Image (cartoon, rainbow, N blue to C red; front, side):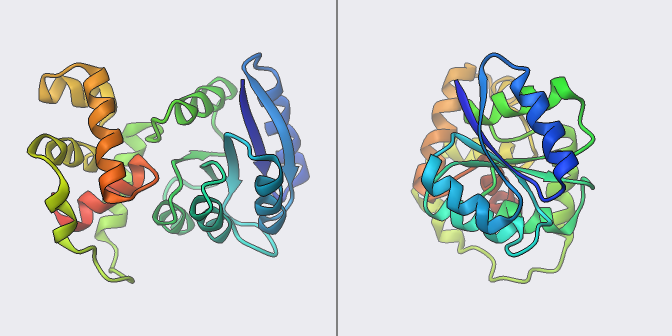
Length: 213
């Protein structure tokens, strides 16, 4: 059972999301939050597997809330946004969100996205994610660029996988590109995230873009 916390300030939207999630036999909605502060507090109390996090909320925005949740390793975060290139999303991904989803996503796609993130595969809708990563990379850097020396800990194969993540490829696509089993790709992704001290595939993708891997 995938335990989900829904953080969304608009009550009608939140109710709709909850209704969709509760229609799935393998998903349980364990809590609802109307702002970022409440989302963090409930995450600490309930320890959900995943949080559906709106980026624009009162009291504490979704980016700041995501940063706290990820820093404390309380749950994976799937960001909700109205626009696929909303600038808030860039901050959320840097903060460690596992992926993002448009609010107008079809119900079946919402459910599959939750399952995908719960499996540890955080890149939602690769084609859209590629646009997001490219847009992110094109923006002026507001924070110091990552130190290239962090890549020294990676093996050659792990660097190749990181490069593929930077292109927004899924595990299946990486497996095809590098001629390896999908299970092996998952192992490489897990190891490189650990070595780079990253929480999500999307963070790895952004790092790859920043370092030109």
